[in-house]
Amino acid sequence: MFKTENFINIEDKSYPKVDILKNEKVKIEVRDVNFFYGDVQALFNLNLDIPERKVTALIGPSGCGKSTFLRSLNRMNDIIDGTRVEGKILIEGEDIYNNSTDVVSLRKKVGMIFQKSNPFPKSIFDNIAYGPRIHGIKNKNTLMEIVETCLNRSALWDEVKDRLDKNALGLSGGQQQRLCIARALAIEPEILLMDEPASALDPKSTSRIEDLIAALRKDYTIIIVTHNMQQAARVSDYTAFFYEGHLIEYDKTKKIFTKPTQKQTEDYITGRFG
Image 1 (cartoon, rainbow, N blue to C red):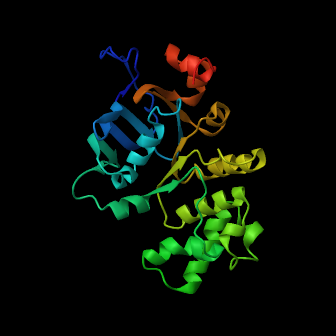
Image 2 (image 1 turned 120 degrees about the horizontal axis):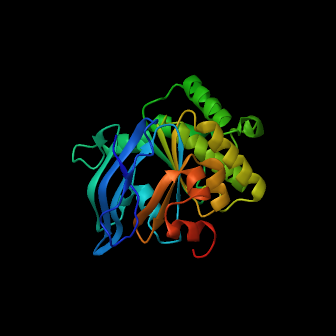
């Protein structure tokens, strides 16, 4: 098992190593990853393993590299001109930055939910059926089964089952975000990336999203970026703390929030900076 690096000092390269995933099956392996926007380096020498069918939270102040790292896991950064990645990111042993990687297939395997809900200006049904149709499913009964299953999984079916032909933009903000989760589930991903999925929602809708994450964790590997420390503590099994593009500390969430190894981690989660 790879030993995940815990940073003692960003300038000191002799970090101690702690094996925090010894009882977990590893889904994603990150090896010596550096990321650049043009000449500006945004991520520095990242090494960590992400466990299968668990929730991993990425925390840290704005601009610390959390979302850049998240988008690197399904190569969404590829759409930005001038970006460059060094190192390896392996999903089930396959390097996703290998030249032979089919990026479309990768993004089918690694779904993404964004900070701002982004339903298509189509019916609720067509929003969820869109992905399966792109991947060749045309039978209406099959599509209906997929739509119902995904809406049930996203805890939205009972609220919308009688208006599947209505425009999705008529849903509330919280409903739209759950619809986007259902749309992501429709292409049968194995990994779900969530970039602050509840930051724009009211407390009740946020609670629904958190309940949904808890329900989905048994079937999916989930990685969530959040600025909300209480949310990270509530929903995640493991937490990674980023600062200025460096991974400062990575461990079980309970340990990060009760007995962090690094002073920087303690200062951040207790609100001394950030």
